[in-house]
Amino acid sequence: MDKTELLNRGLLLGMALLLMAAPALAWQSPQSIRDAAAAAARAHWSADGARVDAVADELDPRLRLADCGGPLAVKLPFAKQRSTRVTAEVSCPGPQRWKLYVPVRLAVFRPVVVAARALPRDSLLTADDISLAEQDIGRLDYGYLGRLEDAIGQRLRRPLAAGEPVTPGNLETPPLVRRGQRVTLEARNGGLTVRTAGIALGEGIRGQVIDVKNLSSGRAVQAIVRSAQSAEVLLQ
Image (cartoon, rainbow, N blue to C red; front, side, top):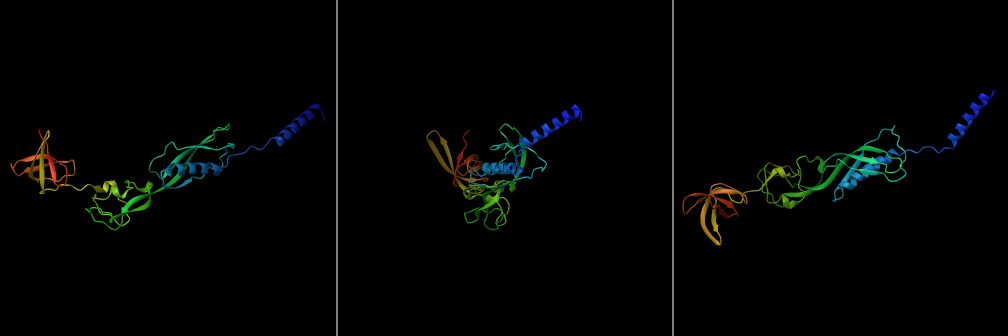
């Protein structure tokens, strides 16, 4: 055996010993990354009392990221108020320095106002007509109401089935004054107020301008609806 062969064998033996002595490289568990992403999403949407189901998507089994050796950092840069999916930015802030974007499926449950029974169009909602029920708000494309008092006294634009959410777009404020109704017309000038009887020529909610016929003069004037029985004349 010549010196060259002996040298090559020695080098190979030395490299083998170094490899045997070196610690095995540790990889970050994919499940730990998914758990961190899901936990951050749950914490974000449950901060105000909502019940949240969050499940991170499966990661590529071929993924190899060095073990962070400490807690992972998670951001939700594209979080929306109502969404069924969100992307979490999971990163290792330690010496390994890696970053990964993880899709998370969400279901955010909150109490929302629903019809307590089948309600026809033009129903004037009372406390007996509605109730609160927990629903996934990410699937309520037309919005929702979270308080009963926001719906009581409002009128339905379209009918609702029992259990169907009451949406803001399906409500309208009923008029305080209706066409043909007798009202008190008030004209104010400084500290002086003059009142007379009138007949509403249109309907209106509080603060809306309608035409009212002054029964004393027979003329139509414009007035602001102030209550169910009164309107204030707009002075020129």
